[in-house]
Length: 513
Image (cartoon, rainbow, N blue to C red; front, side):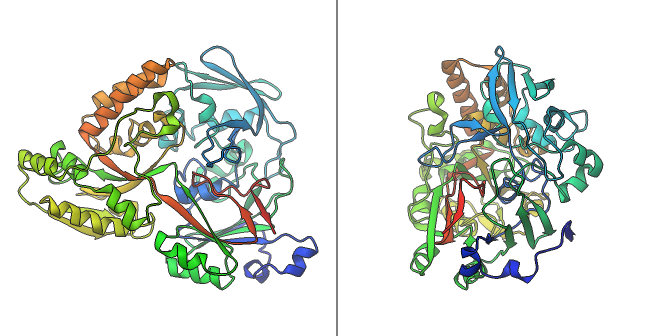
């Protein structure tokens, strides 16, 4: 499918940017080779690494995570963005002052009505929301209202210590009310209107997305004339395109390709450990998978350090489960992911496992090293007596089809809190609970719901421990590691990766030498 609202700039879009043109003040086209491009561009619809990588340039949030102000790119601090300031009015209300003069890509000025529509329309709320998963990111929200010509008030059902963080994170990108109502959900998804530094020029489904500079952006004139995201599933194609000068930046570089690329003149390697964990999913509905002792045994059989050392050259990180230092005062010290083959064998015997075949489904290219990790995991399970078979599939629909036993996924730490990772990924609004893949959720859900409303750090820590204990006991999945993301970039491109898949191409993070 080809969607285009404006005429492409011609063959020059695909050509390397000339030094002569740069000297004359023209802007380059940034050409990015990615493993996959999202099929649509509704920001609350494409909640994935491939989706947010693109939509981050089309839309803005009210509050911005300060990745540039963080030495490790972690972005735990917050700073003004579409809102110039905000203040608390009691424990359940937050008032924000909107930036004046901000324009959407269609020329409309940003108003409180656009903000209200973004959060209270049937996009995410109502009896039949268009995107029910998106609603889970604002589960505490009671309402949003305009209280002045440039002022909005958010109210929550319970005291929510994370509301500011929510407004800087996923599903908080502001959409244009008029365009959304005119185009509808599907039309807007293919022809979006935001306030970001780049606007859609053309979308060729599964092939390419081209964005063009929105020179009226409130942060100033974007530094690139256009951005091309080219879908190139095969790593060899991305590498060849970069080396030939047809690309400026490529993503999803596996560790074993880092050194060869680093030795190439004019190419830099830039990397960051992601605020994201690769996880395995254990579907309790699948054959043999209903006994939690089998699921626990699968997790105990994994030598994660060996995976990190052999597949990631030691650059990935094994966290303490779904428990990360950025949680601050509620981080749970002293926990770890156990590797205990003897205990795994004991649990398998206790569960009555008799060697029945268990299938692990994975896509080959969506996650870096996913296929290699799967091949090693199958062998680790065989070491403890699990007869595992690897099945390579093309997409998540095939992975989650009837009979699923083991699959893979990734869980991002969208907020520096368990409610921004474990709860969103596995809570009542998640696909795992709604499908029935994660059963026996009573203890987990009780602790999570209480955590949403708690403000005392000590009580929040205790509730988090109860929630994590329940998740690890039921074992609907297990954490493997936090991957390192490697980008190969032409040396003249001045750009810094973040711990998220957000690809920040705003003027303060993208320039050209």
